Image (cartoon, rainbow, N blue to C red):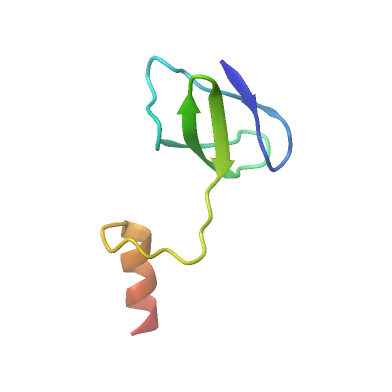
Length: 68
């Protein structure tokens, strides 16, 4: 199935048999990071790289190390 990238509106293919909600993919056209928020119906949203507050998220840990 395909959805439209919210950044550039290009079609992005989602393999609903291989992916799960919460997985991230990249738009092949603009390179935007997209999170799968629904598989039925397929829906993606832009990954927000600002303000991570989940201590188990590796991006959060990287941000913490930079601040020290």
